[in-house]
Length: 137
Image (tube, rainbow, N blue to C red; front, top):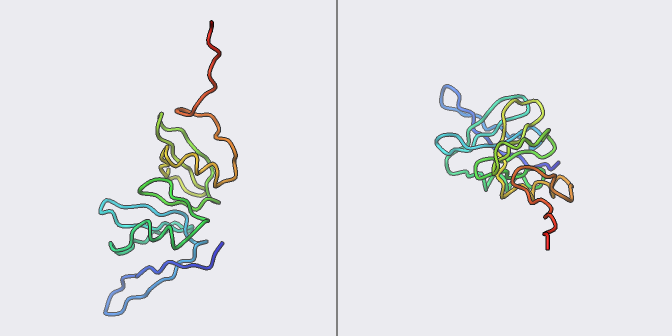
């Protein structure tokens, strides 16, 4: 991976606060909470909220290629993706290793997702283009 880290401020009692530096390998995925703050979920199951001034775009550009923006509200570490689940015609979800959470994958990002994991053709699924049948003359 890379040696980039994401600083996370830990709130502690008293006047001092500790800033934890999360390595990219420690991050499972990032999402947005109800208040649209970025929440980082780590491989050990902990979650950390970032300040409201930090957007998912900033985190994505900082972490780089091992991570993929699956929708407007989610960013995942690609090497932890276990399966792609068609949820409806236009929506998909990703299941990650070691987590029961399902991460949304927008249809607009599907083609780029398959390219990023090294698959040349999209597996056919709901909403994907199908071969046309020959028309009778």
